[in-house]
Amino acid sequence: MKYFYILLISAFTVILLSSCGTVEPVNDNKISVLEGIRLLDTLNAKFTELAAKPGSTPANTLSQTREWVTGLPNVSGASILDNYYMIIKLKSGLAVTYNIILIDEDGYSIFRGGGSKTNGLEKLDELQKRTVPSKKVLIYAPAYSEFYKPGELEKATSHFAKSKIKFDLTILKDKDCKPEIIQKFGDYGLVIIDTHGEPDAFMTGSYLNFLKTPSSEQDIIDRIKSTFGSDDIYKRIIGQELRMGASISSQIDTTKPNWIGNFYMGKLFATSKLIMNLPKLSNTIVFGNFCYSGYGVKPPDQYTENPIRTAFTNREPISYYGYTFDNNGSTTVTDGFAKKMEDTLIRNLVIDLDTTKNANLSHNNQEFYDVDMQKNDYLKRKLWFRHFNHDDYWFGGCVTEFIDERDGQKYKAVCIGKQNWMAENLRYNSPGSMCYDSSDANCEIYGRLYPFKLALAGSNASMTNPSGVQGICPKGWHIPSKAEWEQLFSNFATDTVARALKMKSNLWKNWVGETNSSGFGAIPGGFFTWTFNISTGNVRKFQFKGEHALFLSTSTDGQGKVYGVSIQSQSSKIVPFSITNEMDPNQPPMNASCRCVKD
Image 1 (cartoon, rainbow, N blue to C red):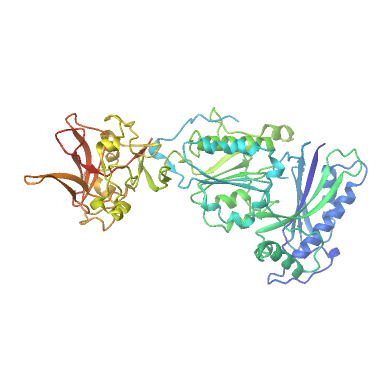
Image 2: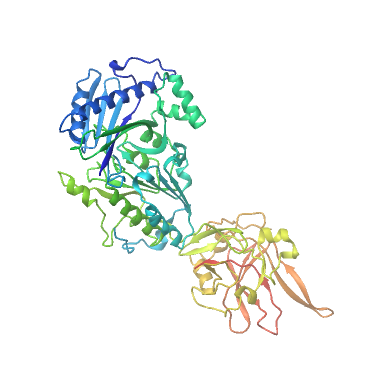
């Protein structure tokens, strides 16, 4: 048996129909939420009355309701969109919407409002890509129980665990998708909104539970405070950032009597106005996985003055994905297509590491469209899964922060050219490593000093790029070879490369225009060596903290000398440095700092 819900949404902008009486508002805007609630009750009663007539169907009942509404003296007009969505505008300014949501025999929504994986075609050159800075992901699924069978969403989100990038995934479902979470969208690198949508709003997981009709405006405020802990929800409804809705369940088989079911009040929808008042989303990719999410028709428009897509793109996200026609309109999207696009986008962004330009494309570099929607559309339009805003971002393996699982230490990292470098010296405490002057405080600042043999952890020296030597580095990282260091230097002018790599810090005793434009953050941790004294023999000695940053590589000259990199306080150039190692029985070893490169 198939079912649907009728959602009646009130924008609460001014006064109620005259037949509903008047209510004294309790806010400065002279707007009454109680008037809106009474209006929803009136609309529900009329819809139920029309639905009880012989031969009624959801579509013709919606049409007859429109005829009734347009005959009321306070109504300026009403429009039906796609047979599922009706907008009523009153002369007073009040806006009311009906939204029909079809439900399949298992009770899951067929529409969200009422594919093939890409192979990286037309990828941008690595050096042209910009990295999504945050690896935090939010799945915001207010309609989870209406859309997903057990384990269904988890199939799509499992891609995050399979990615070579370490993502921090948060999945919020149903009532946990509170409106205030929307204010934090900018904290995430990727936000996917799985819900019901309209041309200028999408459903949240919160609702006002009015089992008994409120007696006054103050009664509503008190109930909201009791439920949510403050009157913020009330203020946002009054300010038209939130919109309250009601639903009627119904069997779609209208040959049976009493196909109209229960009436439910109070779902809260986030409107375009709320989105437009958000902080900038400059570091966030947003996927509006709901009906009308690509709606971007410019005003004047019969449906809305604030299209949902425009509201999001005006917050300047990295990218916005939604469903749209070629004319910037939109419609209901089938749930099956929405699920395929969710899986496709996640897979392409986090497994294939596609750019935002390609992440929504098919294997032959084409946009997807909803075939089932087109079959039922009398104009045979194509509803495209489309990308807006920047083309050149990716999650691409450019790690900006990670935790060494061996000891829980957190490190910063940076992408320079095609390489992903640690932006701090390694601090992993392995026997044989040491702190400058044997001081733990120095280890916290400068990292530990490692001898060559220990750093390679039993591996042979390597001259290749990449070196292939994990050595003392965390899992997924490796010690750079001479060739990898030279690749790093090639991104900068020879005469100024050291300036670009040095951290701007008073840790350096003498500055020569350090810029740290690379983000590498070299600091002068000095090194440990042995000096020969004719009286005492070899003597331990720590040298040049504050003046030299000396780094290991995996490469040797074949004569017992290790290629090292010296960045010195008073030089703007890189100084190659030969490091003695314990593999040479004739030379005592030196200990130097270690930086690792992402595999």
